[in-house]
Amino acid sequence: GQNIDQPTEMTATEGAIVQINCTYQTSGFNGLFWYQQHAGEAPTFLSYNVLDGLEEKGRFSSFLSRSKGYSYLLLKELQMKDSASYLCAVFPNDYKLSFGAGTTVTVRA
Amino acid sequence: EAGVTQFPSHSVIEKGQTVTLRCDPISGHDNLYWYRRVMGKEIKFLLHFVKESKQDESGMPNNRFLAERTGGTYSTLKVQPAELEDSGVYFCASSQAHGPGEQFFGPGTRLTVL
Image (cartoon, rainbow over all chains, first blue to last red; front, side, top):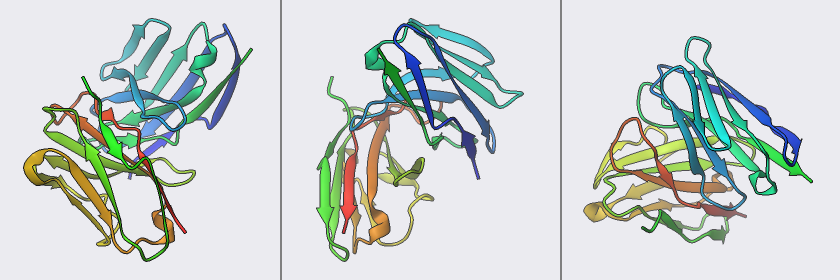
């Protein structure tokens, strides 16, 4: 089976930085996604990493180390609207996304 | 461009009843996926269509679940008869190509079986 771990909850202050870690053990690897999901809404795509290194996109960055089975999502200059669930998902050998349970980020004023 | 839509947004039924969920993928997307999230757990894959053909239904829990995609456009997922453990949020996603790349998700249907 696939095993994807991420923290359950994180809290941070508006304007701060938060790093959400994700570790995975899967039968093969064809890429890692981060999705953002607000309550009652569709998960929306944030980033996709298939090679090692850092991908930066505005306030959000995602890092991947395939040898360590590790990724993180970095959220900078936090805003209240960033309060959401953040989902780490992996494509193993096939292309069925395997998800972690999600990390609920609460941004406080 | 319209995103993935799902209907209904919520459904509350009694154990033993039948429910049909609908998903309309993004126009032109041949690949359609169904996922499910039960309370407190991660989102899990149910099945994958390429056009009207089922490519992979290894995640379907049992034979009470039937998915169809007649004509290769919208898809339905029927649960008959529903059991308490079927409660959860059912997501649909679509993609243009099957492989590495973004899957676009719908908002989900929240199913509650009483």
